[in-house]
Image 1 (cartoon, helix red, strand yellow):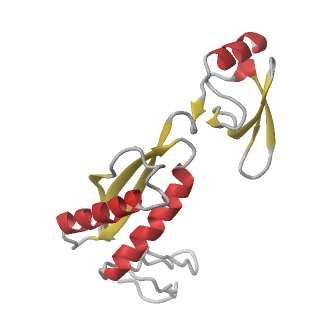
Image 2 (cartoon, helix red, strand yellow; image 1 turned 90 degrees about the vertical axis):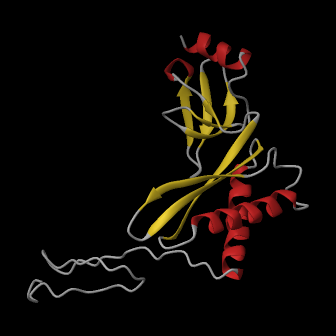
Image 3 (tube, one colour; image 1 turned 180 degrees about the vertical axis):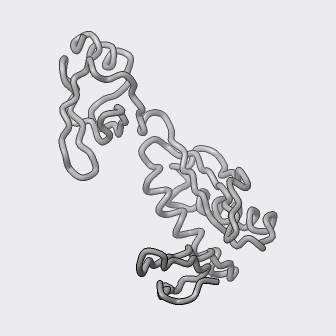
Length: 188
């Protein structure tokens, strides 16, 4: 079973040395594909020896093309159309830049509202890039978007923080400050 699966994976070009793959039981960079075992090194440096017969599925992050998916929370009271246009303009400038124009395959797209909460509306921006470029592109695009949002004075909503001080002492605050709650204080 191991040998047969190994042969199919190689002949069908499911993975190869240097590919970043998700095998279900291990995820990382393929270092060796053998007849019986495939070796995958994960991001922490662990080398996984995966029997080919145990591989049920192969997700190859570095074959053909990849997609950068950015979910960006914006203030709930934002003008959605204005923010979407701002994100798209920034992503288009990024895609046309000297460093990225040969690595971006298609025009960036805003896929719109992904979720709503009391604090934020989450918008999705996607960019199709050459295989293996998605991680560097994501980091660079986040930086470009931050600079654009800062220039236009668009604030990203702070996350709620909660500090527990005793069994019953929690309250959620919609600010960036940490709030301590006295568990002996009268309840509202």
